[in-house]
Image (cartoon, rainbow, N blue to C red):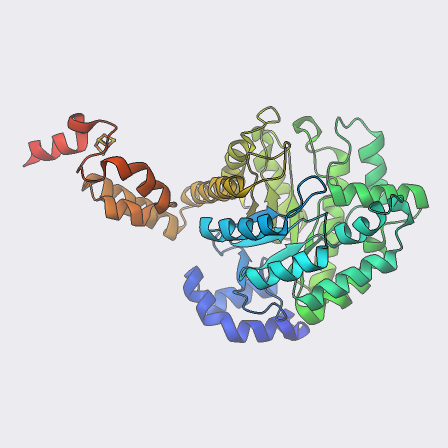
Length: 426
Ligand code: SF4
């Protein structure tokens, strides 16, 4: 039976949106359905999310960019989160993830689903963990029933994709904690589950009871974003046995989920030195049958706090050229504080630039067209044309504001080489 037959919610969504998606991606409807069947592409969209614009992630769709928002115990303002969603939308993010870990998480999530017409992702173990940690109890006391109930509730609320660290086994957690890692486990969800497994002497419930997770997600077409709980948190930890043990599990789980009709993406690193990025991406793609790959960065150096959006964009551009489908942004606040609206904007733009750079290297027609339009407009000193071709027209207009009545820009003025040579040609 085909994926679209096994997943009626996906089938219905596709019937409603296929032609619009084909136009948006400049792909034939057949290319989209073939890729969905093969599992190299997913359609993010839960029919219970009112007002949603579903999007495609995976080859050969355009590379997408995610913005993480959400509260923390030290910075907890629902109003600020609303403003961050607006900033992410304005900057051109394709999806938003709510990583809230403080406040009324249900109210925050419902508000975000209302405000956000883009697919919304969550990490359900945060809500299950919050109930325990806020009571000053040990996460080891978490009842797996509570985690599955949380996932069921979020699916009903309309969440479009969820990060679930199903590939994190006891064996993998032991490797990460007892081998020679510098930074052990840095994923919050990974750390919660590792402690639960360690203290209870039991296997990860999301791995052990994977069928139950699939049963909860299938009716709502909730896409699994199979999380990398053992992603390297330091460049020197990249590519170790713990990381690959989890990737092997993720590949097996993704294959099984597809057989059951549930769409999957794979989450990837993390901190990876530039010279290892290509091999990492190709290895993960190989082990997961080319499932859509969603990476955090990759962050190709550890020593640039305040500039992690730049380090992440450098890694991200190379990762896209190597086959990555979906970039999770990093902001200037990474490793330092909770991002504000300006950080959200800077992070989305850095990832959009990275995606575009990677797509130029891949020879993607839309990216090449944009470059051509920009070059032609520059040659003609056509500032409106440059604005239309720019990834961030508002930035172009803002920086030019003071001298916008001039034909040339304030960088060279009368020394404008474009104008000088044009005069000569005439
Ligand atoms: S003034 Fe200089 S930077 Fe500006 S358009 Fe002319 S050549 Fe380019």
